[in-house]
Image (tube, rainbow, N blue to C red; front, top):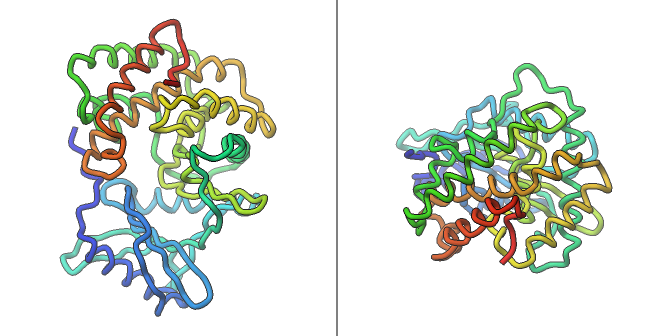
Length: 334
């Protein structure tokens, strides 16, 4: 499956859109604009004499204006609930989602957010970072279950088909770099087992609802005793325990992965309870996420993130599949 979500604009064209966007806000018309990162969307740091903002330029063919607005609606509701999340700024014309274009008429949506201060934890930090991650995830889930979404609310659907089928949102896992064709059968068997296991949980509101869907340590900001959560671009409808699987994305094969999960669960349980049904399916959710990211590496083979995984990441995925197929072992660890 050919994925056409990757940004094809040049850096110069993205800067053109960024400057066009910041000119439409009272406080940023003369701001300094600098690219922060470009993994999926392009994110710019916008600096004025008084403060900083984050400008997000959306990649093509992923979200429409309605789904972006739905994300912003959830962020507004979370902020009112006391959770530290980015807030979209309103332009001089009363817009929170800008429609910008290049000289060649390529159109992109752009949103300017308040800056969330804090330090981003890594897998090298104290394990309490995963407790904090579990704690804030539980708070998001509690809000999600209680929040009344409007009839216009629309976000991406994360289920078995959209994550690991040949027509998944992020492509076909068979296209992953360095994946041996001789290992396809093992992964196919794993996908079938995942589908069978998930039949027991279905999509009932107790287990399935609005989730962040990419809540890794890289999307957590720590400052003093406050936890900030960023990058809700992938938020959508999915299993709540998918957020646990997402917490260790790309690193399931790491020697400390089991400890990370244990500490995440400890943090989560301080805020909300995980049912036995969900506990039993943790290996399934972890394995499904790993294969989902295998598909992502295929559709994003030219990104720095995929290159950084090295030559053996696909082999490690196959090894974890074998572990999962063997008596439902948790597919993590060296």
